[in-house]
Length: 113
Length: 118
View 1 (spheres, rainbow over the protein chains, first blue to last red):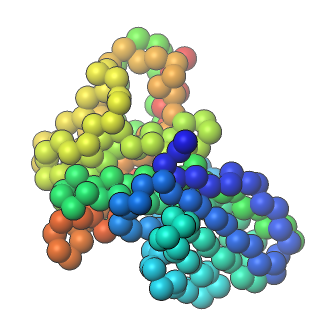
View 2 (cartoon, one colour):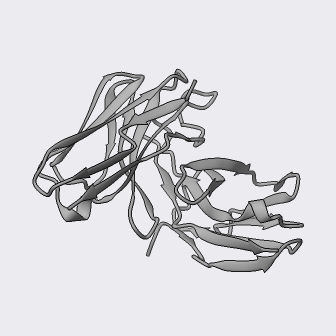
View 3 (cartoon, chains in turn orange, yellow):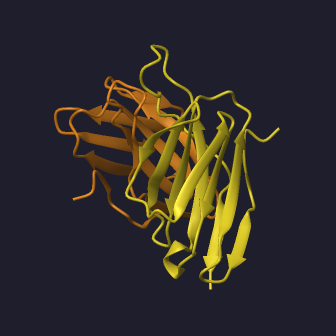
């Protein structure tokens, strides 16, 4: 079983739709959580961190459920420019300098006009 | 001005050759990484260096040898290249969190080096 699991998609939704991605992680000692975005043939870039209380950044809302080891990303009013692969990322830092950042395999999102 | 830069961007070579990819970051970060992204787009960590010291070495063949001359540079040398080494290799860096113990987890990536082994 992979340490970070995501639905690979692809999700193909019309512009303006709301879309939700889910991610589960297996290591209960994981300490911090993120969503990254990767455009085709580009490097991944941080989209947003995920906090226990949930957090919002414009049209994007991230949620964390530590008990269920589950992370979600909600995109409202989707735009064509949201088309990308969304990577769930977990940092299971051990409290020393030997932190380990694990990437999920990504969920592909395609927004159609 | 590029925060994390890696060269070359594209590399096409024959099986059995030795090649290097260079990476430099000007963000003043303590930790640098090499990740491999294969054809299925799965990003897998290979190495992590903290202030020139090797921290993480995943189960990577000995043919891969990272070298960090200083904390701003982390190069990757690959010996005896194999077909399965074809992938995009990303260099990244991160800064420690406020308490100085755990990286915040925000990674800054280079643009990637696409290696094709024929």
